[in-house]
Length: 189
View 1 (cartoon, rainbow, N blue to C red):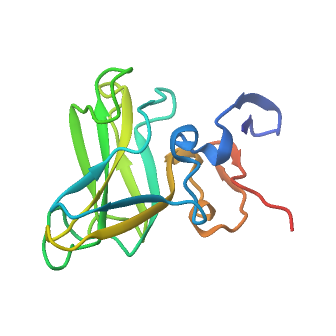
View 2 (cartoon, rainbow, N blue to C red):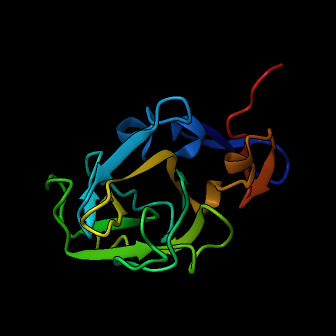
């Protein structure tokens, strides 16, 4: 939850986006380092959409941060090659309507190690006037002979207005952006 304050400290309103402002929490929040999503296979292009489509908020702007962790690592491009074998990419499946299946899309967008802000963090723009919902596709690659396994966890989609770098590092932080005090995932020790 974020509290909007005016310059004198008076509360203007409360915005309720629970769980560190992660829009994917209800569909992918169960995948943690201790309980990752596992993608295994021998295909050149191993694809799964592990969650459901979520409706994009229209009142939080068009800029979002996609965060994810994977093992053994992120590929620099999509498609099988010696350098991508066993590595991963992550995708948005954007849809112009709501209520579609997770694997339905009007526009797919691929994220790799070559287009991140820093490891496991991508800053993205989604035209929320055009695209109403999004799901996540996970991808890994094999030579069709050897089985590969990728593990994914901490997959999050956070509106830019609520993004604080502490979300990925696990450190507690407080940030003030656009008159919002943001306190993601604060843990008491």
